[in-house]
Figure 1 (cartoon, rainbow, N blue to C red):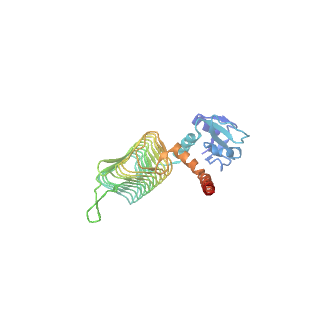
Figure 2: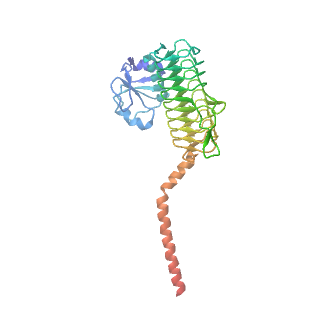
Figure 3: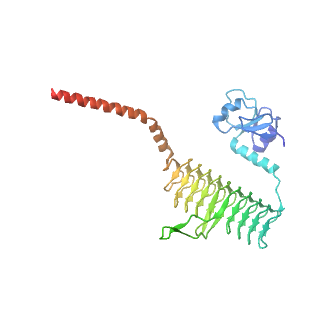
Length: 352
C-alpha cells in the first residue's frame, strides 16, 4: 500500500516539514532507508544518519533541530518510537488475513466449546472441556489441554503448549514454543539421597493483552495460581517459576529467570539475563538492568544493576573507582618503597 507523507501525518497528528506529497510504501531503519521508505529518529546516537539517509520521510520529535540540511521530508511527532510502533500495527492489521475454520487433521474434543470465527490449524489438539474464545487463532501443532480457557482474539502460534486447567485472557499472543503450565520445580529430599517430587496441582492464569515470546516457559503453581497480569510483555527464552506473580504492564527482556513465589510489581522493566531469586518482592516501577542478580526485596521505583544487585548510581561510582585502581596500586607501591627507604636511612642514622 502507498501513502503520502501528508496522509501519514494526519494518521498520527504529526506536522509535515518538506514535501508532503512524497510517496511512502515501506518502513526502513534510518541508516538503511531508500526511496519510498519511512524511517524514524528516536535514539540520539542515530542523529548523524538523518543528514545522509535516503529515506523519503523520517519521523522526528517536534523539538528536533537540524544542524545541517536534511533531504528527507520530516514528520514531527511527540514520540517517534511510539508513533512508528502505532504505524507498524496499522500496517500489520491491513496486511493480515485472519484465518477461520478447523483444518484437518486436528483433534477437537466433543466437549470443547469453540467460539465464532475461530481458527484451529492442522495437527492441533483441543482437550476435553476446553473453551476457545471468539476469533482466537490456534496454529498447527499446538496443544490446548483439558479445561483450558483461551480468550477472545488470542493467538497461539505453531507449537504452543498450554497444559490442563490453565487460563489465557483476551487479545494475547503466545509465540512458537511457549509452554504454559508445566510443573513447577518442586522436590524434597527423601532421606535416601534422592528427591521426592512435590505434586504441582495449581494452574497458570494469564490476563488480557499479554505477549509471551518464543520458548518462554511459565510453570504452574504448586497450589493456587502462577499469575501474569494484564499487559505484561515477556520476551523469548524466559523462565517464570511456580507461584510467581507479575504485575500489570511489566516487561521482561530475553533469558531472564524468576524463581518460585516471587512477586514482581506493576510497570517494572527487567533487562536481559536478569535473575530474581525466590520468595522476594520487587516493587512497582522498579528497573533491573541486564544481568542483574536480585537476592533481596526491591523497593518501589529502584533502579538496580550488577550481581548482587546494587543501586545504579552506587554501582556507577564503583565502576569509576575501579578505573583508578591501577594508578592507586602504583602509588601505593611507590609509597611502600619510599617508606622502606626511609626506614633504612633511619636505621643507619641510629647506628651512627
